[in-house]
Length: 277
Image 1 (cartoon, rainbow, N blue to C red):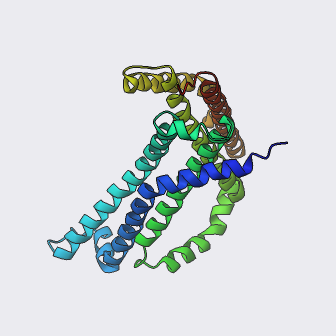
Image 2: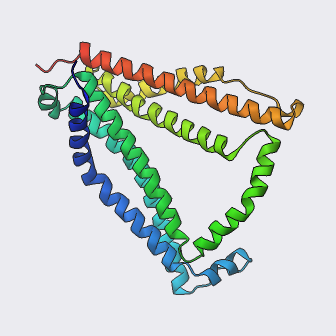
Image 3: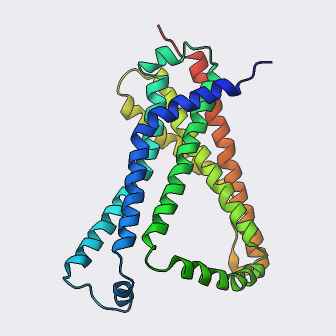
């Protein structure tokens, strides 16, 4: 039996090497701005601001605000560029000039797509980790150990409050991870399936792809109506927690099913409609 993992690994390695030239410098800038923001923030000025004192015309205050705003902009750009690079890399390697080389290699279409899917997942995960670290850097002078200690002290009260709704921290974290996984799969496969229609669209591809995205999201909106709703006014606290977990679970499951459909459609399109001549 053919072992697909070495070939998938090579696809991942090649795509990571190519896209890292654009994303890693951007992530580095985000971390640097987060650290710079944290170093510029003065605990005393922060306390004064939240206490109602208006920011003065002090040059340092304006520099801090400017750096903080730049950090916010770069954080947004990093998230958007991660998605753009994933989409652009897929198009370059599967539909444009690179396709002649990539798709002539002894790698099946499924191995190509799985390699690109895993690569997209790696970049989305990396973007989340980098953003989280940069946020921590922003609080570096505001006493991170004290913040974590206060959170630890508040943990028993949080657990007790969650128990009223028949929830635990483990359930909350698990559901958050499931929804993040499902959402990432949905976004990456949506990029794949939209680009796969480029095989049959000859002119004005940007316009038609936009209509395809709108159409797919409209259909998905109707499918998401299958998620059960509940009226908390007539339910006990425990029932509210159970109903919410059920709704989030079904929502995640629908996204995973849609992702599988999008992946299958993409593989079908590239297998049946691709013509390198």
